[in-house]
Image (tube, rainbow, N blue to C red; front, side, top):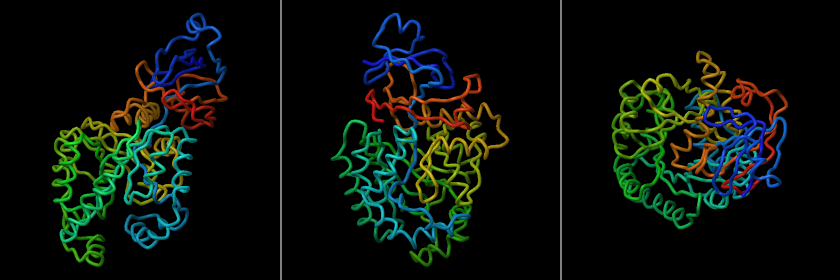
Length: 403
């Protein structure tokens, strides 16, 4: 058992001054410092002035297999970026071995990320994720729109999924990702979701990321038309957006991006009990506009934040992601948005990924950051923690100090 006394605790939108925590693997107490001193005496660790306890951050969506990228890819619009990914794919994949993915995971940890959802296209990041200090939801990705290749594609997907299930450990959760409505045939989607439902696996999918995707799904035209004709000899989209969403009925899913959704599609997402992952930096770099979070709120759709991968971001840092979001969503009330962003990388993200963390409260896992700041603590701490410098002094995951 450990006792930490802090200048402040910030969790679930609440700032608790002069409070501390008692924890082992889980949090046992959240109590004023004075009472903890009287109860535990010399067992207490005094963190001192400027110390803030935060829940560990949760990165809901990251691709690790492209972590070797620095300047290989083309930014500004989605289709030039996608073409550059295809052109550089082999080089980037071959350049990112276990050491590369492990460095990316360790970078996330140093940035306060104690849990993450990894979308794995090839399974090359499996060992690094199994060995990570963090909690990991490992989304084995299914892709393939050619019906002639359906059996082979599904067999490859199963092989990767079963390999991850064999390596399951505490805090490592094998899961399923369906790449997107334009890239996966309906037969494959339905088979994978049937398995996910039977095994109670978590599910994620990309959805309506770009204007090009919107045009292709709606009318089989636009930039994707020549892309699919040239690469796959396809002249028709594998699914419409509405059909795709309907497949996930009774399988609560984390849909990533969703910046191009219609009112009817958002209504279907809401009625299905799904969540949306917001990746603001990725959306900006790929020219995919800004997610309208007020529309999501009007439909009561939960939304969380993720970094996406280093193929469409320059950092795996949720503090940076929150900072950029504060400025991208310029019409929103700054303080309210800051609170929403904090929940999107802590308690709301934990709910979406079905993890017992993201909150500093009794019975939750003791995934905790000890942060040091050099400015006065006041009612605008949620904004200052995003915009002002800080030092992460210690990181605990399930009560164990990992950094």
